[in-house]
Image (cartoon, rainbow, N blue to C red; front, side):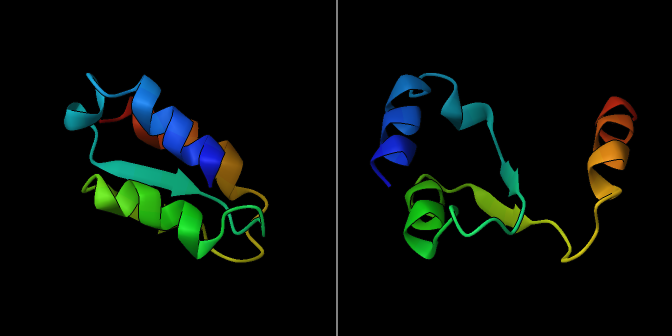
Length: 65
């Protein structure tokens, strides 16, 4: 959780332009970790369970925006 707070502090000037935080379902990303970003008004999205190919599709999806 402290690492999430440090990241938010480092991104303080640019975090206003962000809308989403996308992460996988790794146990490292606890609800407290997500709460730090939710407090900064970011929408937290987790990837689908058991979707190993999803990592390969995200870069293409981002380039299409």
